[in-house]
Image 1 (cartoon, protein in one colour):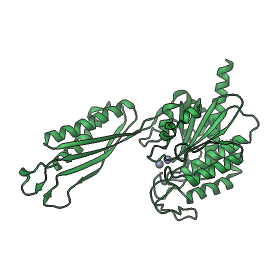
Image 2 (cartoon, rainbow, N blue to C red; image 1 turned 120 degrees about the vertical axis):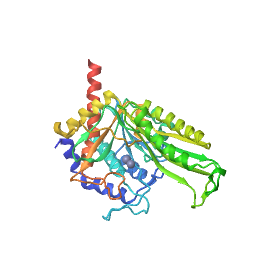
Image 3 (cartoon, rainbow, N blue to C red; image 1 turned 90 degrees about the vertical axis):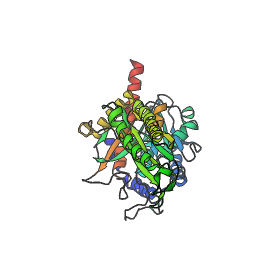
Image 4 (cartoon, rainbow, N blue to C red; image 1 turned 45 degrees about the vertical axis):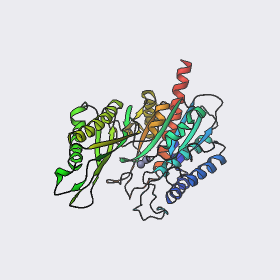
Length: 395
Ligand SMILES: [Zn+2]
Ligand SMILES: [Zn+2]
């Protein structure tokens, strides 16, 4: 085991207790007041400079060096609006709120990294520990950026990680380029003319338009996109009518678009609008298309992903880097930060056995044994970046 991993493992009892306390007291996006207070208290005591709230409940803790580059390390803090299915002692005490994505573990891992770096006598880089709120669909990362995150805390590079139940504990991966998909939502309201179900000729029925739109949307990816692009269009909601003998005046469908490159994303946005408007026109009803761009594609910068890869090889060991792990069609708010600052997003395995629940599953739990690997990997990124920075300066 890497020296840093075992050093942090020696304090695992404390970190595990902190993680389980956060797990028992989960907070939804932009409501992470208790979590924020916990981080501020621990890191203030350790001598870091703690920012005023940024992005409602976000915070930046800074460890300053006199010289060297500035690096951002980021974790998310929010829980999901869902019930927990676990029965262990540290299960959520709040009904309908659950740390089902492991952000409790991300928070404590970043705190552990900060504490380990505080203990070092020599400081080669200024480090901003960025704790972001509201990752789960609410855009907390963007909110921090809007409130001046990178103007107040400029970074030469930024790194973050997510736990990955599909990989075994001790294994890590990072991709160069697109690592996670963009995420958009659409809602299409069709309006015609209602009436008696036995006399459809006196109505303008939206039902055929909705049905045709669903089928036509399916062919956008298969017939219009470059087959080498990866993208998904899923219709996830359909609604029309309340009873069997009335043709309702209107109905709607809704769904999501995911893509691994910006061009495919744009193409599908245009396609969704065109198909729904076209089908509506063919069926003599109106379509009101609401298309909302949510998260961009998560793009790991080339140089930073190589830095992160080398950091993982050094921290986890040569044989514990998974070079073949695919890009994910899930999305991630860290993508906003990567649009403003070069960096990379690492995935770290946490499973100890087959069929471990995936994130967002009611029986998921963050594996505390990942904390030392995660903290050491983030510190590994700092050390590797400093090494490269220094080499470039002296070259
Ligand atoms: Zn999640
Ligand atoms: Zn997550």
